[in-house]
Image (cartoon, helix red, strand yellow):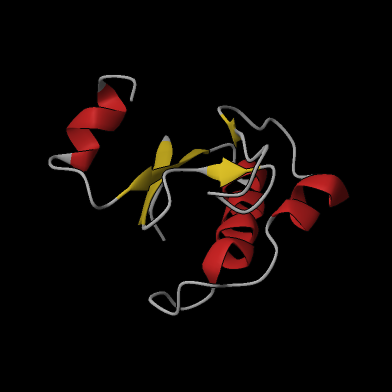
Length: 90
């Protein structure tokens, strides 16, 4: 086991959205302090076919991270230097 202050997940999506990205009204949630049933419902079903669990798996990871007192970031892995972008506040 390891300890850490922040779990960073690199994804094809740059965060958690209130609706599927690209649809009208789809706003990214910049901060989630608690995983509620409403947050879980936002995860929807995997659509990209590129990953191995989609947003549902990321929400589950968020529960584990929060339970351990760890922050979590979902960041785009398509950008150059994604970890630097996270540290810089992107």
